[in-house]
Length: 517
Image (tube, rainbow, N blue to C red; front, side, top):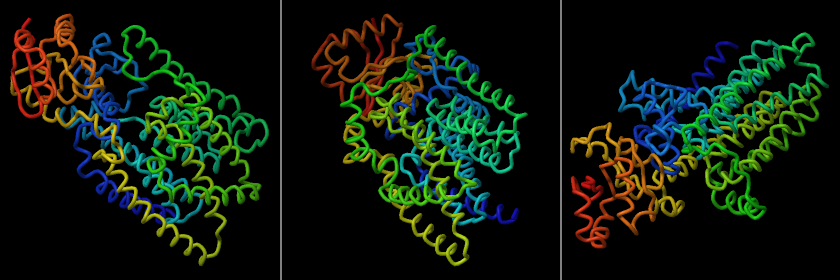
């Protein structure tokens, strides 16, 4: 069996590597761009500022200096911190690619854990590939699995925790339960919504102690509650520390609060419009939903019949309830941020799917039926992976038909090579700058690799003198702007603009000015 397991791990690793090369060969080296580049930039900014400012883990910073010294509250930034540390090994300029590959490596171990969970319960190399590859054919997961956001990484870490929990479920070794909770806690610290998995397992264990009495021996009940307490304490302590950072430094770059649906109409809008129109082929593809429905129906029937495994249905019920409740609590974000699905719904969906799938596979005993089942698995995965690649690439290049609003408002094209242009002008990396025509807090500052502030589109065109006052009050002397905007600005203000600003550089993309007075 050990040799078979090794073969399975090698096969999974080979497939994962091939898919990753196909997905990410020209994606991994780039700075944030594509769908939700602003949220990506915020996380990468934290990593680079860790690197530049003494690796002070407890005072995370971004490029944006609206907060005191750029210090901001943020969910446990271990992801960004490790990426920053890799910058000392591979060079500061390589932090972006190190960050992306770090996320991808975490995703690999998470998906491998799904494979191992299935294999240890089925002893089938081929069918055990289905749960992890099923997830790795989700366009939204693929997009964030090699990215700067913590959602896919936290989700993947929760799968590692679930693997150890299932090992505990089978062998009753308490150390495995402790290991599971270490990973569950880390995942919840990195992304609060992933705590659904932690709470699901805690709820299941409480039911076991009260009713099933299969997993937790009487003498281990006290230790189990201690594990619960330590896990929840870590999450609460860091939550209150974050509130301290927000209050002391005014660091509100990241959304660090609950935003439920604002009304029943908004709730209806999400479930009647956003899911079917915007996200149906983002979260998964249409065939995924059919596969999940068939697997769920078969799995429910088989688990209900299997007295020895029936208690797993409580995991399903608790996890599904957690998803529903959390969706109400964070509903407003779901409308605008697809990555909330990755950390809020996807861990529970994939764990439930894996439970059902494993039970379906375990019910097949004859060699002939096993072979037919595996052939079906392979035939299903080929089109899923093919179409996943197509939808993923539309997210990367920001397809104007599928994402018209994002396409129209993307600003990174005029910022490319911005840092090199400021370097060539002799503008120090320690300088602060003011980026006009940029809505996101850190995108422009990241591309120009200077700290500073930004002025949103539509907020400054009416009065350039307000921009001048804002810069002067904050002792910012360098202003950068989309070059296409400058002719209209100069025509509007005539000589007044030249009296205030000195042109340092202008090409077809970027204009750089110095505030004279």
